[in-house]
Image (tube, rainbow, N blue to C red; front, side, top):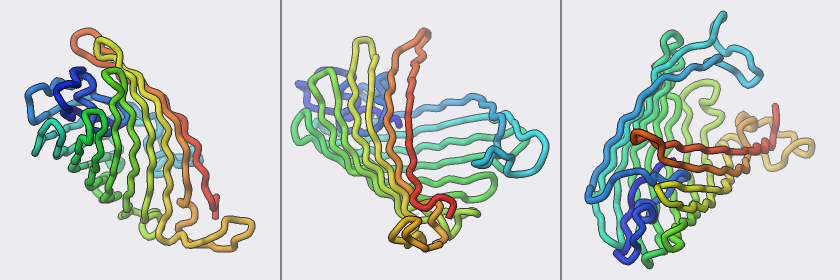
Amino acid sequence: LEQSRGEVAPDVTSQRSSWTVGELGRLPAVRTEWEDKRWGFSVSTGFQYDSNVTVTPDGKAGAGSGDQNDLAWVAAVNVAYNLIERSDFLLRFEYDLYQTLHLDISDFDFRSQQPRLTASYGLTPSLWVGSQGGYNYYSLGDDTYQGEPYVLPFVSYLEGTWGLSQLSYRWGDDTYFSSPFTGARSGPSQTVNLGQTVFFPKNRYLTVGYQWYDENPDVATCDQAPPVGKCRSLGNDWQFSSNQAYVGAGTPLVLGAYLDVLYLFRSDDYRWPNS
């Protein structure tokens, strides 16, 4: 969701805008202090409490018996480096690491690693086009859970010094390595996102947007949904599309802290429910 600075032509003087044009993301990192730097590094940590770590869709515990609540340590690391940085072009490498470690239920420790490369070109000082490519790797406990290469072209338009509009399309190819998804849920996914961000004085912002998502497993080969179709393909239960809308805001707090708030509403449409 985050992004940092994309340079623009000198006649665009808004510092907040210059950090976001040529980039993509739902929440603009308006508080990132990247001026005169080609690199960035951040570390965050904390604790989270989950009242039902192994919950299943019907609300029952998915593993073991007894209490399923647990406390987890959470840590995140982000590294970014601008390989090429000009007034009309940006090439950036980024790597994100996210880790949760539970005190008791270690089988549900989660780790994600996300290297990616973003290239963007300014057709004009206000209109940028670009693409991002990367690989998302996820593990759960001691096991590999999912791997996904993806490509994400995008268009960004800067409205003076007060706003930023972005349109993006994302295609990914998911491979699941753990049951029950192995051989059933793997396949392509698509995402279309349209967002508008408005900047306010003192590094405040408001963002709204709409996103469409579609997941179509390789083994979900049915052409017609029930009751017309009679197909019982293995991947049917994960063949779906979703529509979601979101609104978010951010503002500085005291002692250098920054608050991001995001509300998201999502509606999923499963073509073959409980097939």
